[in-house]
Amino acid sequence: MWKVDSHCDVLWKMWRDPNVSFFDKNSSLHVHMDHLRKSQMKLQTFAVFVSPSVSVSERFYNALKMIDIFYEKIVNPSQKVSVVLHPDDLPEEGWSDEQIGAILSLEGADALQGELHNLRNLYRLGVRSLGLTWNWRNEAADGVLEPSPGGLSQFGRELVREAQELGIILDVSHIAEKPFWEVMEQNRGKPIIASHSNCKSVHNHPRNLTDEQIKAIIQTGGVIGITFVPLFISGEKSTDISQLIPHIEHVLSLGGENNLGFGSDFDGIDETMTDLTDAGEYNRLEEELLKRYPEKIVKKIFFDNWIRVYREVL
Image (cartoon, rainbow, N blue to C red):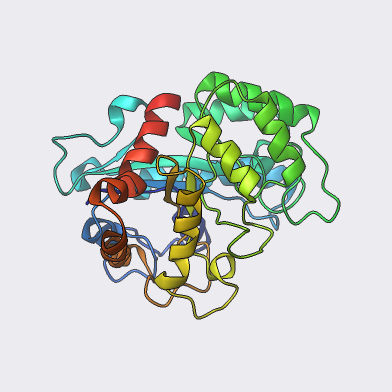
C-alpha cells in the first residue's frame, strides 16, 4: 500500500554529520532510501529545522545549507527520487515501485529572520509547507512551550497571508493555542495541517491537540499527522503500536476519516517506538490497521488524505 509521511528530520541529521548518507542501506538514519522502498513510501516530507542554538544572524544561511543537502544528496533522478513542487509532481497511477517523491517543509519561521522576502526565496527553492513555530517564541508567533504565550505578531499575520498566496501549506504543529486560533481566523479557505501531532484527550502533552483543535483542522479539510514520538503517544519510553491506535481511533471518532495521516518525526527523536523503529517498519502499522479498519479507510490514512491536501494547496 502506498504511503505518505509528512515529517522527518533527515536534513537536520545530515547537516550535523556530513558523512551520513541517505542512499546507504546501513545508514544510521531512521529514514533512508532502502527503508522507504521497503515500506512503499511514495511521498516523504523533509523538514528544514534550524536549531535554536544557531545564532539569529545565521539561521537563514543554515536553512539554505539544508536545502542544498536536499538537492545534492537526496533528490536524485537516477535513483528515482524527485522533488515535488506542483500537483503534477505528486505520485500517481503509473509510478514504478522505485519512484519516490520528496517535498520540503520549513519547521518554524525562525529561519526567515522576520523577512517575507526570505519566505518567497525559500518558496522559489522548493519549500511547500510552513510550520510557524518550533516550541518557543519567534518573530511570527509563540510555540507550545512558551510559559505565557501570546498570539500572532504582525509579521506572523503577514506570513500567513503570504504563504497562502504562494501556495504553501500552513502547519500548526508546535504552535501555541492562541496563535493556532488566530491562524484559523485568518485562513482563506485552505486546508490547514498538523504535520506531526497527536491527541491531548488520549495523552495530555503540550505538543498534542485538543479535540477543538482537531475539529477545526477537520473543518478546513486539512490533515492531522499522527506522530510516532513516544512522549506524545503515552509518555512512556517503551511504547508500541497498540498505544498509538487510540490516537488514530480518537481522530476517527471526531469525524476525521478524511483528515488523518501520519507524520513520523523520524530522525528528530532520540527514542522510538519498540515496534516501529524506522521507516522500513511502516508495514507493521499497515498490518495492524487492516485488522481493525476496511482497506479503503487505511488507504485514506496512509496516502489519499495527504495527496488530496497537496493537490488542493500546491
